[in-house]
Amino acid sequence: MVSGKGAQRILLLLSGEHPTIPCSEALAVLRTEGVEFETVARSNQVLILDSGKGAGDAIGGRAAFTMEGGRFLFSAKPSVEDVELRCSMADWSFLEGRSFGVKVTRVRDYFMGVDTQKVQGEMGYSIKKQTGSSVNLRAPDFWIRGVLTDGGFFAFSLDFTTDRKAFSARRPRSRPYFHPGVLDPKIARAFVNLAQVKRGEVFLDPFCGTGGFLIEGALLGCQVCGIDLDMRMIKGGRQNLAHYGLEADLIHGDARDLPLERADGIATDPPYGRGSSTMGENTKGILSEFFREGHRALDKGGYLCTAAPLEINPAVLAKEAGFTVREEHRMRVHKSLTRSIIVAERT
Image (cartoon, rainbow, N blue to C red):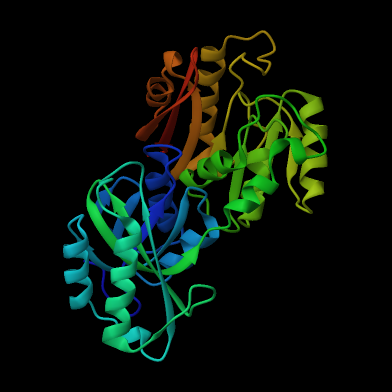
């Protein structure tokens, strides 16, 4: 049980862009930042946790696939009547003397028979009646959020949002040096978070390409090091990092023979021979050798997050190199490519 000053039950509203990565990323962020937590409930795009102090700051400052979150208030059956009942029983003392607004949204097509506008109106009326607080739909002191999803209705006080627009501003084509096949900054950030690298620690991308993972690691305050066999990528990566005023050690080298002694965490997207060059080498062979080098470089307890085509089965290669695979996610890219994304611990 999570206890102590600042402990509370919170709700995270997750992105629906992937079925499993948003939840895993949020939990990895909390572990990385040393925030205690226990999972209370999960629904589609909703994660409820008992958490220690600092959970909101940790998620809001790092996560790519959490949209917003805050103090959990109540849950209800997916009906106007039950939401109104639960709302009348909730503790709204924190709103006294403050203004508020209510916004209710629906995840996907769950419970289409429930009118979200009516739920919103009934909640606003009930809260105002109980507290005497004023309604302000432009700039309230508190937003009260409601979410309809597969698990029912959930209400929370909006305490933080993530800056998802910042990821769009860093899209690969906006950088000085562009190369096809680069992952979206949100995915790159999620990989870095899943590698659980803390501020000030050494983050390594041994197939760094144009520097997308390094940019995200540097923005999180990590010491970043990138390695690539293609000198054009090293030069292009330097341009891209400089574009954001960031620093990194960029080394012309081979991921199968890492030119550094250790790293605290590794995240990378190796070349698959689709839109990126493997220099004529066999992709499975490259990955197998890389995993052995990654295992050598990481300290015990360090994490590696990487991806490869599903048919290569990177989880098996990681296990053969001595890693313990903690998670595997699948991401369909197009008809002929599904990525297997693994998170492996150096045990």
